[in-house]
Image 1 (cartoon, one colour):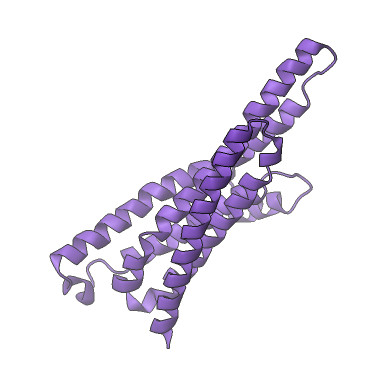
Image 2 (cartoon, rainbow, N blue to C red):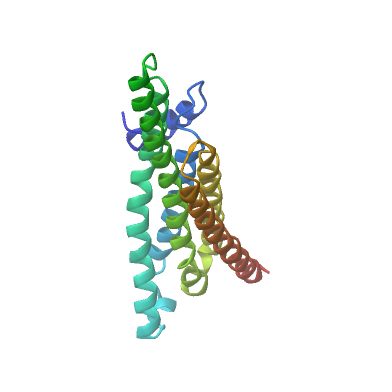
Length: 213
């Protein structure tokens, strides 16, 4: 059964087990997805309200675009919940391949490299999607239903946790990649995404705190 088709209770039990997957990667994708879903909930609670109707057409269009953007991001995040676990299983399967002959060793080594690279690409994509979500959450802080400002706050925290957790899962796989140039490139991408995530989340949290005083 796919992880996304499990009940919440069964998913939690699956994580709380001796199986190494689903692990931090899939949980990070889920965290970001829940954050995005919370932000969209705020959107649903904003449209049509008196305060929203008083906004300019430009603000309404901007808010709607951000709302729609989150839907696109969320669809991709949901797909990655299972993909991360699938990629982990590919890595494990590659390590279990026969290695008696030189040919078998070569085939096994190539399979391990391919699977390990996939295992870094997926969480990196999660982090990038989490960043994309954070980049539009300011609209929900500024224009979202004020009674749901704490929901936006939780959305920020979850997307931030999802991004940081995803980057952890990228980094743990890097020592297994033999292509040094690729490793350097991935590290650079991680640093770039993480710096933006930290800056944005800090700014958003400060704005939310100011509205709660």
